Length: 198
View 1 (tube, rainbow, N blue to C red):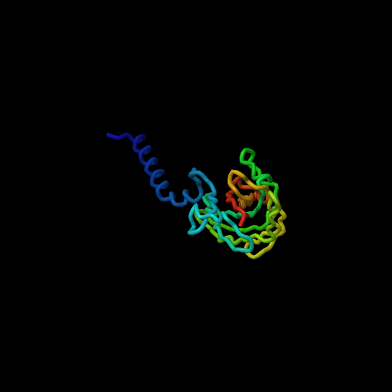
View 2: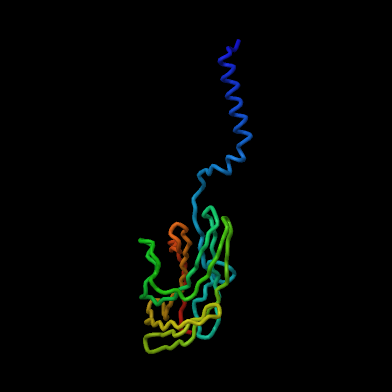
């Protein structure tokens, strides 16, 4: 036979258990449980939206395309910037060890709002102009990105190993940091090389 004390304990336990079942949808909204890893995807793709087919042999005045994209897996709405930068082989890239961006000024930027789980991709159209071969060096005066022209005046020396004059396009990912009140480098960049011998 059950004592009154045991009966009261079972009754109170049942009420608490039933209450938790009834309130569980509300508790799921209020209590945040640990989620998986939070990260942002970042990519540059060549022809056919593949990780190949990048324009390598680039001729002056001809138009080329790549595709840059972001995937948001940060757990909420994010505001991103993608900076387009162009360098010769001696200028600095972002520092992966210290997580700092390249000090080169951005030539062009994209601004994107993405909900959690959402992806964005855009076609980046570019061309080089004012390409001058001067002995063992090559100078590019102008770069056009999505219809906007930028004076770059970058010179590279002939690369014997790869047989060409190589420049590098790279894209940096920046993310709006609400507590900081500004955009911060998100420690991600993607790139591809072009040979301006054409």
